[in-house]
Amino acid sequence: MLSFFGCTMSNIEEVPYDQELIVGKATPIQMLQDITIVNLEDYVLAYGQLDSISTPNELSQSIDNNQLTLTGNLNAKLANLSFWKSGQHYDVLLKQSNKKFYELRFSGSAETVKAKGEFNAWNPENTLLEVDDNTFTTSLTLNPGIYQYLLVVDGKEMLDPANPDSVSNGMGGWNSVISLPRAEKSALPRLTTESSSPLTITLKTSNATSGLFAYWENYRIQNHMASETSIEIQIPPYAKDIERSHIRVWGYNEAGVSNDVLIPLHYGKVVDNTSVLSRKDKEANVLYFLMVDRFNNGNNENDKPIDDPNIHPKANYYGGDLKGVTQKIEDGYFQSLGITTIWLSPISQNPEVPMANIQIQRLPFLDTTVIGLFLLRGLTIALVQMRSLKSCSPKHMNEE
Image 1: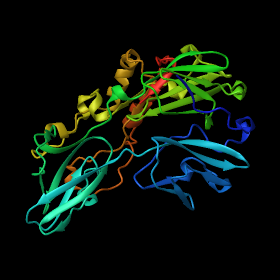
Image 2 (image 1 turned 135 degrees about the vertical axis):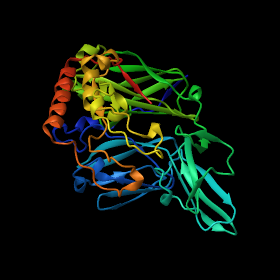
Image 3 (image 1 turned 180 degrees about the horizontal axis):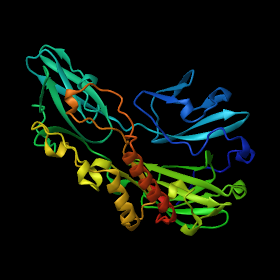
Image 4 (image 1 turned 120 degrees about the horizontal axis):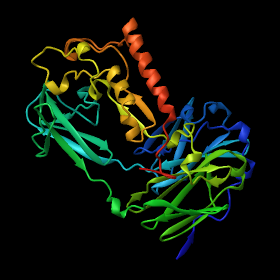
């Protein structure tokens, strides 16, 4: 069975390449329940130049300065929003909210009941339960997943007595757990590239899609067709004029949204050899994020763990430092993993007393002594040497 999702291109031949309204590829907008607020400057820096914004019929919109408010919920799991300027549209994917409601309930005598957990940055001031006849309740709106939390009853932390599920916090204590099931991965569409020609790209899908959204840069491609197991997308003819551009593809069915596929083009032809990619292709870089203190201790002489019996060893400083990061770069650790980009945790002066004993304050940047600057210089030199590393990315990137 063959189905057509679209039959015409969306007048995209008029794309003013030298007057891009959106810089880079627009991030999909994740809708929230009922009301979603979008900072227009995240998409269009000169938002005052916009003529209009078009959205699905089930959404209403209002604009206040640089804030776009979308009211309502999407009927389908994916949809499209368009920014319009001078008769040209720039398209952004919309993703239906998959948040679920979960009620916290505490019964008993108390003055105040709050909750702190992974759903509110562990800040009890963000979640206050309302009382009605010695029953305290609040409704949380959460994405599917697992969330650890504690109740704070009259200032005392405790497990939720109404929830039998708990897990070790890794520091000698326990946290209650909320588990909201995710969609079964086996039921979702799984998109992979299969082949390409000068005019088209063919993808395979593990499960049939109910809808498909494909974009060349920030313009939706309307011309594509699909069967239960494959999808064919037309490469826009004007892509041949651009050295590097990209096609992005999403699909969905009743179970949920597929992985997204990123397909790089070189003057309109699909890139099928990683040797063509360079470090300028940031989407092809493999990123490694590390917490400096937790990563590698390169110099034991600068260790300063806090001497306080109330601090669990796993919550204390481990001694990781810039010298330790530099050593791992020079040892080839990152190269062995195929890493091309390192993201360091913020480099600042950590407090030397328990956090509970100090007021929150702006932490200064790395110490600027000769030793501190020397270590930073050594790290910088090692990072520059990583520029010679080759990307180990697959020819087309699939991101979940």
